[in-house]
Image (cartoon, helix red, strand yellow):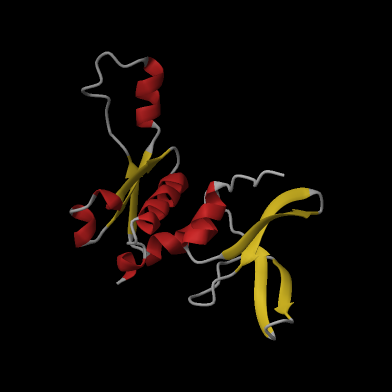
Length: 155
């Protein structure tokens, strides 16, 4: 069986330190679960699905992965922690002559997420776009993680 492509919120969770993320079925609905990172505050509103690692004699928390792509209560604390600014991408369609109506509409409906730190102003890694504010934040977190700069953003 081919490995299932992980959705955006799961990729973000893994960038934030979640491990062992797997798809699960809860009451007939598809969810993702993973091991919550041990450092930092746990995300709000998590649902614990398992709790004991008998092999290592440790308590771990495998919980449903928060929907960072759709849930402000999960993503809001990340916006604050990483000092992310979210704003509409553009205020007008000036300079878009020759663009289709759909292209102009998508431009006006996108959002920017950027860091309010000095290094971000000097780097392409401090700016990402998404169709919604939360998607732009998720995209930014993934780019920062891939560049090895996610933890730099909080220092």
